[in-house]
Length: 87
Image (cartoon, rainbow, N blue to C red; front, side, top):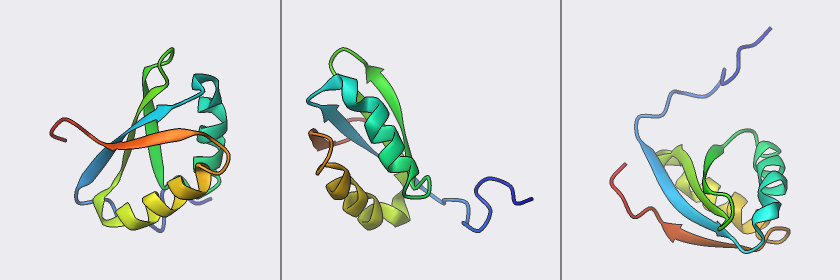
């Protein structure tokens, strides 16, 4: 049985984005959509009522993460901002 994450190299450097869900109740849908793309990234809920999330990913996969977020934005209304703090 393969372990989770097998087949991907351990990230050398992580990066983050700040996401704001226009409908905070859509966090579950966003989670499912992100999972459907192979656990490319993960998010932490910063403020559930405001729909604020921190999205973390491997810095070398930023282009792929942004492509996936663009696809997710077809189903989940969200704003993507740079992470305002040092990682």
